Amino acid sequence: MSLRTYEADLFEGSRGRLEAIAYRMLGSAGDAEDVVQETYLRWHAADRERIETPEAWLTKVLTNLCLNQLTSARVRRETYVGQWLPEPVLAGDRMLGPADTAEQRESVSLAMLTLMERLSPNERAVYVLREAFGYAHREIAEILDLTESNCQQIHRRAKQHLATDRARTEVDTVAARKVVEEFLAAALSGDTEPLIRLLTDDAVGVADGGARVPARRTPVIGALGIARYLRGLFRPSAAKRTIAGGDPELHAAVVNGGPAVLVSIGERVAGVICLDTTSDGVASVHLQVNPDKLEHITRQWAAAGPHRPLRELW
Image (tube, rainbow, N blue to C red; front, side):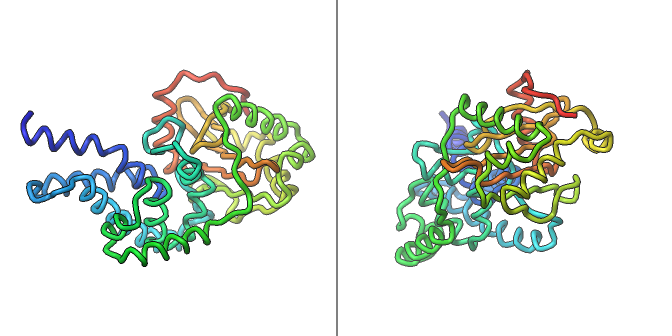
């Protein structure tokens, strides 16, 4: 095997891990693919004979690209129309990365990726590398050019910012389908009471249309408010069909490790409703309808087809 082939294979062997780190760091599948490609270009241009530990070098380059991206993203999001939510990713995508521990699975949930927006770039990097990928503080310190004790302090601070009182209920494909079927039965009943019974009293509903698709621009707080919002959302109308561009079909899916309603129109994914389930009920409902953030999952969905819908909407 030639050196050039070996180096290309070495990078390709790391690509999945790099994509998984970048996705957790950025909350965007598209941006994750872009920074991994930029990392490849820098690997290609580097004096590779002087790189003693390629994995550490690639992780450092990628992480610093993500930190730059996070800094500029904060500026862009100040002018973002409405609420910002991460890009959803279907189960089985390597971008979701390792899922051996509860911490790894939690770190890629839509609820946690949304919460991580409150962290500083360094806090997010330390949290992701430590919790999801098991890097030692010494290794993280070398990646971020910080002291080991500083990394430990940043990690503690990040965990405090992300602490919640509830533990998510982990689901497999069968359990996710059951949750989605129950949710759709309630949402399509035309009554708020079935939905209220599914939701926790302090549940939160957030929608992201990115100014591309009509979506509520402020969060909905509380079971009653969310139930009323969803009842209106699922109520059929000619205007909704026009906006959707066709007849939507509703599917059960596992997205970012949790149950989700996937709305498709033809081969296009038009929306994803992620349900954050706890022992007390559904604690949050994240509705992603921004077409820019559905391109990756649309490719996934098409590749995994054909699909039989649970219901048709409108």
